[in-house]
Amino acid sequence: MLNNITLGQYYPVKSPIHSLDPRTKILLTVALIVAVFLVHSLVGYALLLLFLYAVCRVANIPFKMLLRGLKPLRFILLLTFLLNLFFATEGKPLVQWSFITITDSGIRHAVHYSLRLLFLVMGTSLLTLTTSPIMLSDGLELLMSPLKKLHFPAHELAMMMSIALRFIPTLMDETDKIMKAQMARGADFETGNLIARAKAMVPLLVPLFVSAFRRAGDLAMAMEARCYHGGEGRTRLRVLRMGRNDLVAALCVAGLIALLVLEGLLLPGGLF
Image (cartoon, rainbow, N blue to C red; front, side, top):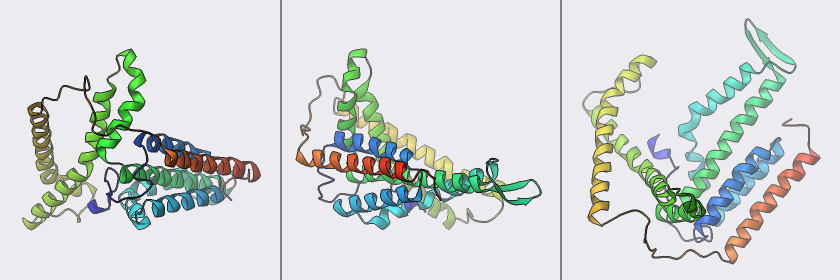
């Protein structure tokens, strides 16, 4: 399961999407998130899925890799579906048994919010798969640079976010190694009830936290050894410039949003 986590990972290939300015990709990801909240029908979700598939093809990223990143979220998706299914009281009752009532509105809400969460994760994963942590940090810093006039620590915040994203796959790999080592010593993480499984995670969490703090200390020492003092007077190897491809990408996302708005006007009946 740990190998299925794609959020925070970078897929290093050459493609028009990888060569886009990181500021463009960040802003378009935010626009895509807004587009997800504009969808209210299955036709809209089909358009979103087709758009994400096309972006994966252009970015030379296997679409199954994007889908594989959803496997660790199965429990959250199932929980979201069930909560909206059983706790929606409005609408026409379809199933009534004891205190459980399932309505047509509950089914619509369950499908709607589950799909919304799914597409939010897929869109965010595309950003990290096509943008290296350094470029992502530079893009975030430049986007937040106007706030520096208000003494906002734009560089430090961007650096912390990029480091956090960078260490997600590293910590997942470390977790996998510790889990295999503990299983070789007889640890059991898969059997027993919920409380037994929670107790079995203690031999996993303690060395993981120790390793994480050790890595943080090593990183701090390495940054100090290289005379890192924040963003003041800092230069960049690559100067970010937006080009024609950035304009084309922005027009594509704008076209998607226009289609979703038009679809919402033509099909105002909801999901079904």
